[in-house]
Image (tube, rainbow, N blue to C red):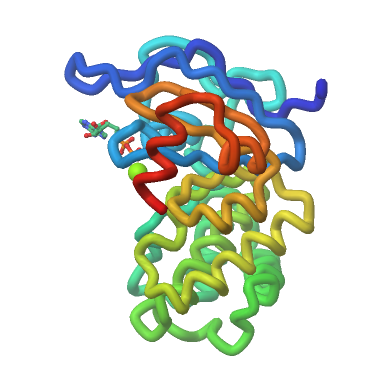
Length: 243
Ligand code: ADP
Ligand code: MG
């Protein structure tokens, strides 16, 4: 398509000599939504963590808008050009909702307090938490906490958002509000990679599904193909197992 935001080629990663990612190739186009599925331990989280530089890689290239994320002048702090949302929210417990979003803008992006608060409020509206800006994380539901985490990641104005099982820590009835937030982002044209076990959500929202097993991309394709007529036996047996 020629409008690639993210390019991953020949990526290898091991922990203590054990290969957890092997020759990963993945291109993500502008505004594309990719869901990564696969068994536990297949390397999905590690892949996302490599993309946002929370892990170093053994070999391979990761390009964002055609430039290596390892070159010197790439955003120094992880999470600025590439936003990441974790299963466990990772909010600052002693900050309010407003502070959780505004403070990193002041410290990481060096934005003055007034503008930081203004930006934070805009994002709080976007994730529909207007009446919660003075609450602390412990006063929120899991779904609300995750929406704060999403707003905080968006505050850095990232080119791409990565989600690592964003609803896995939530009670099922709270997953829907987080899915809706992600769907809203999709409508706004955000490019996203989502690791999820929620297959119906993945099928609904994604342009492409990537199936990983044992640190490798086994198969990728449109949701219709991957979920209903996958080519590879391993994809089929994984889908059978979880359904
Ligand atoms: P997934 O997210 O698909 O469940 P992970 O990326 O978390 O898989 O893990 C892939 C493999 O890498 C697993 O075997 C896991 O035990 C191992 N692994 C992940 N993180 C570390 C780490 N920090 N140190 C050692 N091994 C790790
Ligand atoms: Mg994981």
